[in-house]
Image (cartoon, rainbow, N blue to C red; front, side, top):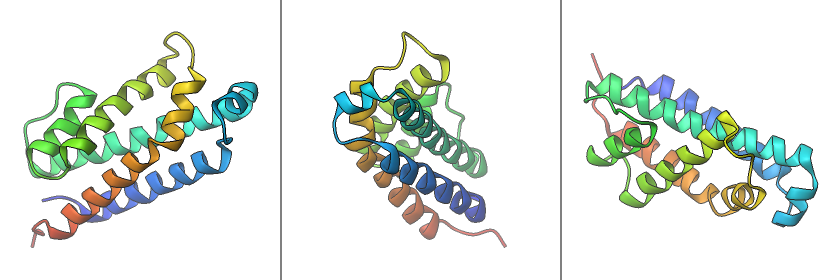
Length: 144
C-alpha cells in the first residue's frame, strides 16, 4: 500500500521547487540566457522538481509492489500503465527526465531556450503530475 504521508511530503517538495522556478524565471529566453545566475537557479530547481516526480514514482511503484522501471522515463510509463497518470502527463514527464539528465550531468551545457520552455510551458505538466498523483493516492486503498 502506498505511503500517503511520504507522497504528500514529496508533493509539497515539488510545489516548493515549482514556486522557486516561477520566482526566478525571467519573461524571455533571452533574459534567462543573459542572467547566468538565474539560468543556474531555474535549471537546478527544474532538475530537483523532476527528481521529486521521479522519487514519487519510485515510491508508488515500490509501495504497490509493481514491477520496477528500468529507466527514469520508464517510471512514468509504469504509473501510466497502472492508471495513475494520463498518457500526456507520462510522456511529458519522460521528456522532462531527459532535461533532468542534461542538467544533472552537464551534457553539452544547458540550453537556455529549453530551460525557459520547461520553466514556462512545462510547469503545467508538473502541476498535472502532482494533481493526478494526489487524486490517485486519495483513492488508493489504505493498509490496516
